[in-house]
Length: 259
Image 1: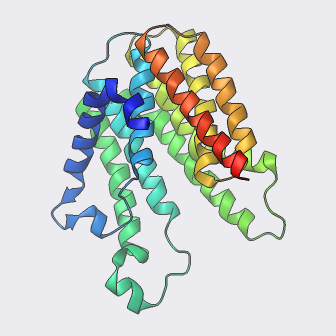
Image 2: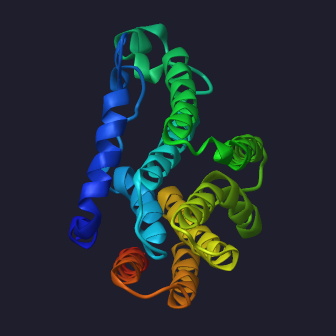
């Protein structure tokens, strides 16, 4: 279903995937041998698709938008790899057999992805976006620190705390990516702010889905995103985004019905 919805932007998604796979192979070998980096179908397409689709709302896109989609995915993968690192590595017998289960290789792979996001910015000629993207990386890592700190406390995180954490760890990057993509496509400042708001609400829903918590709130954020989408330029991309949002809402409803 997701592949069918995203079929109109398949060429752009293939460009992003091809570029990233190219950099998954380094002199030491394939990065997937050293850390859990292989994204699921959902995980590998959603963020690049959102950047491309939001940018297309405002006009034709060029290679810079595709590069930006890759940048956002590199940052996401780096954060995901680091978040999976064991605080207490298993016995040497286990990670000696599978280095992905240790800590040193995944740390290096995550750092490699962060470095690759910077080189991609430079290659695309959009290095002026370094500062806001670096600030988002700080938010992601701050969120991770706060989540670990909270995990050591006796009471589970409240909804407001979870919202703050997911806002930092997931929504901030998607929101910024949508805003920058809109800017690259020629959006006005007001339109870019609308794109950022759309990305934030989508990002909150995505973060809640990935954490497998608060499905009702995830649907609330998706509903807000649909309302914001109505105020953005019409055309094929808005139709695809609406279909994508409706698909995500249907998936959340399935979880709610099962529960």
